[in-house]
Image (cartoon, rainbow, N blue to C red; front, side):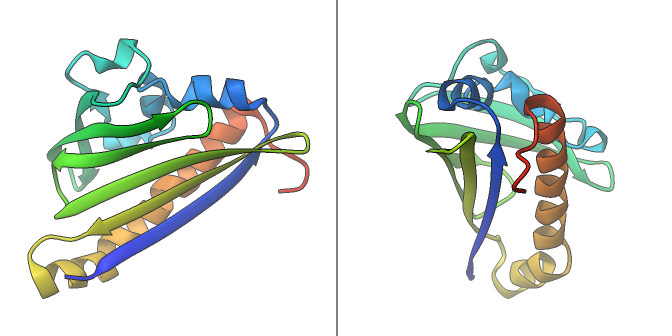
Length: 157
């Protein structure tokens, strides 16, 4: 089972406080997830800001109308610079998502770094190569567009 790492960066023309307020609100995750995934927070966490130890339970349909239950825990929070979440239960053997925010001239550079391991060994690695990594790229490309629509796009992008 191989460790996979994906990194996505986006510069947005808002203050670090505005970026933090948007991305630390679990309810905004639904706004930046492709609608065909039918993403829903099902445990009531949507109405509150994140905090260390917070559990967020989701239902989504990432592939071919197959529902997935996923629970993540917010493991680290350093307002307004970063937070991290880890999968407690869900589709991956492991999932660790770092959300980093850095002030830059004219706005904020946001970096998402995801370290994940697929389940079921070599078969999972094959599924990752054929489907999962491509789907994650598509999801984060969609997020980049939606974030640009909601928070704006910096001219240097």
